[in-house]
Length: 288
Image (cartoon, rainbow, N blue to C red; front, top):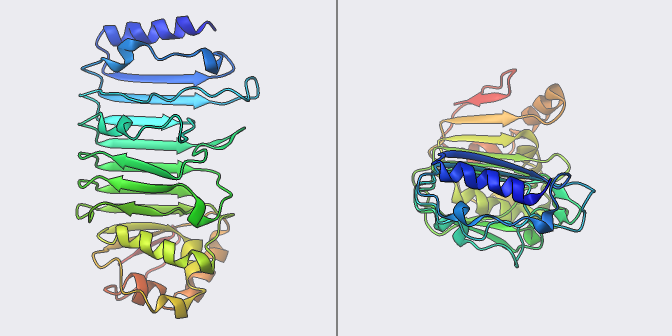
């Protein structure tokens, strides 16, 4: 497909005051290096929801669809970016702060021919003063935890944070007092080692105001292997009301593992001191 045709369609939609725009770009149809975001893309005053999906293929394995460096969309409240590559050359943190009313941000990184979507980026900085919901997913990252791209959040109104894939360091410029729902779903092949413990616990401290927490069963399983090291950390999730456990494999085996490890200091001492009982159910939900 001629990139000009796709660009014309985007321009037409924006010129007719579209409020929700979804662009699914595939390098099977459009040569990545020939794509240019039209000027009208950056000038919309009414666009409220934007979804951009970049699908990689073997057709042009050495080309990358460019990520918009700046949006400046005043009405935008929901942004979803899937399949783009962010590196030190093409990523500008102002892409988020330039949208002052952004409330929901969904970032999904897939494995590409260049590695993973966070291509050699040391820190992904998210500065969004009105952001309430942040969803982050990365399927692949073979680096050690301390060397992976970390998330730096400046979002004082954040209520929901969900992270999936290999565990990574998260830090915040302020205490997230509005937090309600937090989720860490870790890839089964990416396990927590003893050297990772300080980074994991420091990340949990960022979200210690959460009332609802979702964890992969094997996160608790991994942490429970180091009870002596956990003694140095005080109770973290002091406001928690509900813990949900997610299984990535055999539910019965993971339930047995969870029962075996809960006697260690994980749930009642280190993470969930105010909770008095644990109810394991068939749907892997522990309610307190």
